Length: 196
Image 1: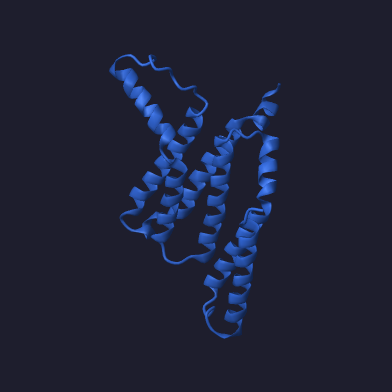
Image 2: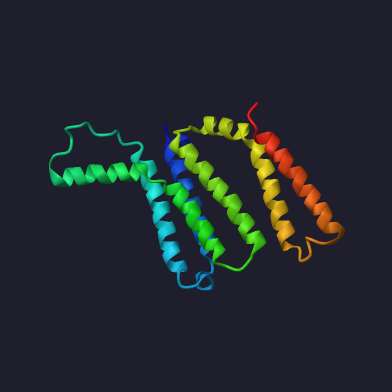
């Protein structure tokens, strides 16, 4: 098998995509760091650490768990404890919360936040696919089953960003039509998400 074919069917590809999407989300939410105040660099560092931890978790999932007598001595026990914590901590959720907290530090930017929401959804999907060990063909089947809900969510995201960008979305005929469209889209998205 050539290197190119191996890369296309490798789970490392999904893990790399998840890591790049996570790093991109953190960078997008943090920019510009100076506008976030004094806590922004700390939140950026914590979010970046969560991205790195998530990549480490995806790599550690492929390592078989050691047997009960595998760790001898204090260094071995510390390594086993660190591996266990790396596997157990919710790194993807930490990255998501960190990016959202960074976005909250900035003034209102509707379309910037909408792009961040779409990118975070992609990051969480890529992380889930990499964690579940889904191969390339199976990933397409998984995403095809969720396509309707993803499209409805993307439509709601665009609608929300558009309504937040309008200066007078709450008054007049435009605001009323926008509220009706949002209600219909929410009902449709809820109907698509219900199990059959």
